[in-house]
Length: 338
Image 1: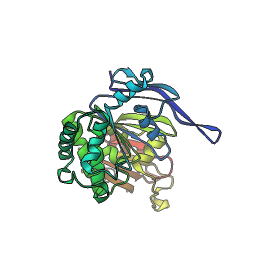
Image 2: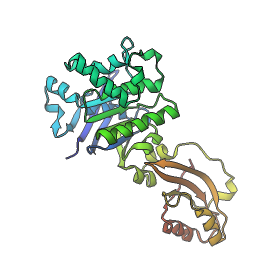
Image 3: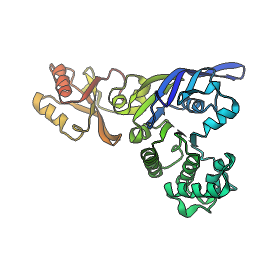
Image 4: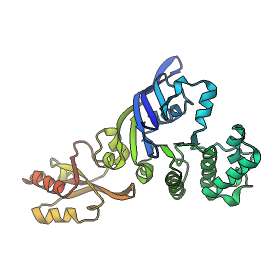
């Protein structure tokens, strides 16, 4: 059985007399120990989804099952107890400004009734885990954004949760700090076997540390699977926009007008091979490179390229088959090039 089961989840809100459906019949299974990404554009419903996992938002319809327990069947007291096993960190850190770093980490333990001496011992261990042992007496106003998020991570881990929910936890951070926080989360996942669910609108976050991903668009689950497969074979417009972005590429129209345009995805073995040069030499045909990019997907090199074949080339299909035989993912681009 999966650690987190989301079954036909629907969440509706009343806004100015109208009913807005934030989530519509979403079903997901997240396995124990996974790092699972839920990605979508702003307003897609992903934050509502993550808040539903710990019942901060109660579903209008559907079920949330954690470790075999249906949260809908719990009393308020039982639900509070269950939530202690589900840590959460936010984009805005949500630290208590009037408390020191160590007191912020101790706070959930105090609420749980843990004795002060034991709570502080646990807090010191966690501050060491997140690399802030020297900041325990510091107040949040004296910390950088990355340090504040590390405190938030330590606080979320205070009650020994089996699940950690991260709601846009790196969106307010610069790229270098984001990388350090993602490395910390991955390290925590490996050392403590905690299941991590990451809510984000940044595909770079998903490709950096997630094993599996779900794509939410306008409240609907449109695509899911392991990160490599979704990256290499996106099936929906929402997935393609999140993966490849939406920046137009300007290219001389006379070279591609009427010709076939294809998108190829390189795997780790072919990402640095001279695939296009070999193709041009083999078929003696000019090829336009309309877009090219290489990135890290789960620690492996993945490259994307959009090619334009000449309109009058009689060997377009042969060239596509040649690319496929080289182990590349090949798909035709029929719309605008992004």
